[in-house]
Amino acid sequence: MAQGRQPAAAAARNRKVVLRGYIDRAPRVDDMELVDGGDVALRVPEDAGPAMLVKNLYLSCDPYMRGRMRDFHGSYIPPFKPGSAIEGLGLGRVVDSTHPGFSAGDIVSGMTGWEDYSLISKSEQLRKIQQSDIPLSYHLGLLGMPGFTAYVGFYEICSPKKGEFVFVSAASGAVGQIVGQLAKLHGCFVVGSAGTNQKVELLKEKFGFDAAFNYKEEPDLTAALKRYFPEGIDIYFENVGGPMLDAVLLNMRMHGRIAVCGMVSQHGLTDPVGIHNLYCLVTQELRSCYFGLELCFYAMPGMADNIRLILWLLLLCSCSSLGFCSDLDVQCLKTVQQSVVDTKGILKSTWTFDNQPNDFICQFTGVECWNSGENRVLALRLSNLGLEGQFPRGLRNCTGLSMLDLSSNNFSGPIPSDIAQQVQFLTALDLSYNSFSGEIPVNISNMTYLNMVNLQRNQLSGEIPWGFALLSRLTSFNVADNLLSGPIPSGLSKFPASSFTGNTELCFTPLDSCRSASNGDSIVGMIGAAVGFIVGFVVGFIHAMKSAMMELVYCSHCNFSLQDALYSSKTESHIRGKFVYVSAASGAIGQIVGQLEKLHGCYVVGNAETNQKVLTHGRSFLLENTLY
Image (cartoon, rainbow, N blue to C red; front, side, top):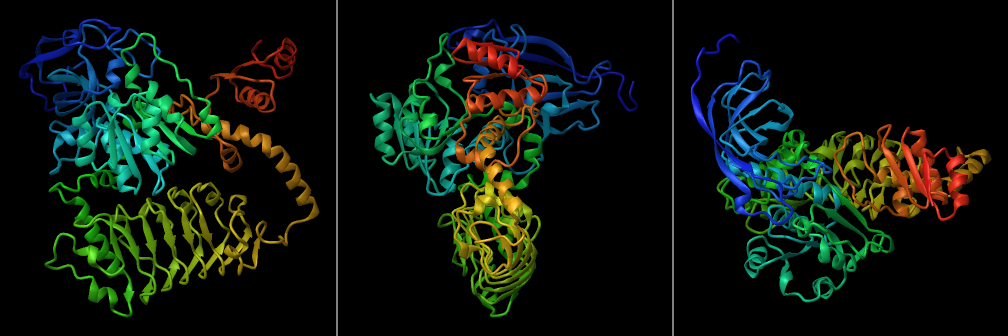
């Protein structure tokens, strides 16, 4: 017996909600049953090993659970066991623990049972909740799986840009309503669909959607979407599937993105409906990717530790009395003011923090807020104010900052190496006409929302980080008049030569020549370009398949374009022994994909249209099997 543990333990009745049996239709109340599980000792059993006994306080009922009520074992998550307590996401208090990472009294969230008390031995399926004034139930909603699903799907899968057109199906659901609000905060035009007029009004009046419609009242969904999106849809957050997905595909714009979160219209069907317009993925060069529960749930412990992410989600609580967002943004500006040398006294005279109304920082010189009436900083335009010193501190507390302009001042010293962590949501960065020195931080290229970077006329040295070529939204880039050297990344060659002039050691397109290039280099470059055209597609394929090693993202169809292939600079790890199928395997791309996968130790099957191709490629490329 562990030291300090009492010889006797109190007990309590343990009620459970169990599944009576598997179903192949829409669920009914009588498919589940509340049973008496008997007495449970309020202590972890001696033979249980490291474990936690948790009293469940809140339980979440989520759409993915419908699939677990079927006798189907081919999903990423196994079915429920009839007669046993239903499993789901929940929040509870630790009653007793033999696990070193958890103590009695801890509040935890994660996968638990639909019962009063659950014994949990898998510590990785729980995360601790820091108690605060935030209602505990929020950790199953905004700060739980729905909030993280909305965040990952919208930002990581869809990569939004300000001003884009966003459509959300099942928009009044737990995930959809958050996606819509995130899109509005990002400056997008947002339309949602729902199944009742009451829900439609909720979307427009409470959640701030630009428009919404009742899909049940639309005889032609394609025409309805055309009416709301005459210029087409940039981003579709997919929750329903079926006819809605088919209609959306016909209305997507070039290079649109689709985050496939779920397909609730197919949950109750024994014979799911197929999709007819998948060819649009190719003709419109769309990116469509399904992301699984693991990405949003099992990644949550690390993500929850990221305070910036949580506060970004809390921006949705603008009408809340919690006040985190405004307090942080006020602290942000206080720190900025204290960290710079204000030679003209402009910030000292106009940034006053005492006895002010709710939206007072929105009146400060150079401060632009997201919305009137609330202290949430959208942009800092501090150009030509006579400011000196090093890069301002405190910007990480401006969690919604989208634009930073420090141009035409006299800032000096290095650009912080962690700038991407400080201002990760920037779309525009202007540090031109200062005296910043040192190398350009490599992690600026991780700021994936950037569409404008201006570093002109500083004293920056070293090479331009190659990662800039991967910033697909970048439409303006200027590093002229610095001390930069080395090659210009090929992905930046689309910008004019004036963006790079004044750096005597820079070379390659769009500049005329590269002093270090020899004829041999040019020949190698020509050969590389020819090979790269084909290999680039293969690189794009591997990149699009994501990391099988992590097993977090499940791409049902992830289309990639020539642009992806040309600008993909890395491949993700696959696991040896995976099963790979290649269609049109005898083609220029398919045959290379098959060989690469074989080199990686995968089992590969391909198809072709003639027996000759089947025999030739089966022998030449050592495929396990080929299909006619």
